[in-house]
Amino acid sequence: MRGTRGRRSRLRFDGWIAGVGTSSGTRVVLGHWQRSPFGPFSDVMIERADGERLLLAPSHRTAEFVRGTYSFDTVRVVPVDVSVADDTWTVTAGPLVLRFTVGRRRLAGVLLRAVPGVLAARPAWAALTNGPAHLLPTHVRTRGRTGARRREWYGVRDMRPVGVVAAVFEGLDLGATAPVEPPVRFGFGSVPRNPTLTRVTTTVERGRPSASR
Image (cartoon, rainbow, N blue to C red; front, top):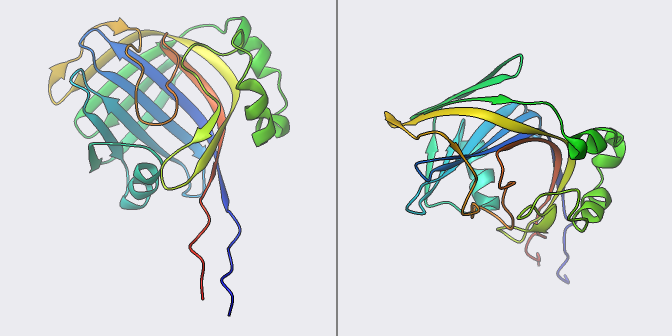
């Protein structure tokens, strides 16, 4: 029989991404997914001042998927709990305890929030917003290629600034709020330089499976 190729499958994740920096040089990216193919879950990506990239994921299944999409030096499977009270987010993920506040939307957030959810979920919207630098901050890309021959689109739907950050990792205080600088290196783009909470609909397209005979 001639070899055949399977169709590319697309997985959709809807939730929030928070990117924060600290004065110690450690940068933290939280993914809080309210809807996903794996059910609701949260994961944390950490890049330390020395460049080590660490993933904290709540299950082996989610860890396997995330590390197949992004690049890490270390992966740990630990409980990841996120609670939101008013404008304060609290994250407990194994050796990490993170708390941050969010402020009022600025103009970009107001404009993005007005985008209909159906439109924002389409990869075409992510491709469109990948260009206008006046809407999205420097280092932010909304489409690109990731690991394992996957493609990814971020449909940005809202943005709010992060205010006060308090973080402890492995018992050490990570210091005060700081820009996410240098940019994190997990995938094809970084989070905004200024600490930001962003609502996104993320689409991940898996690479084609190998030809069968």
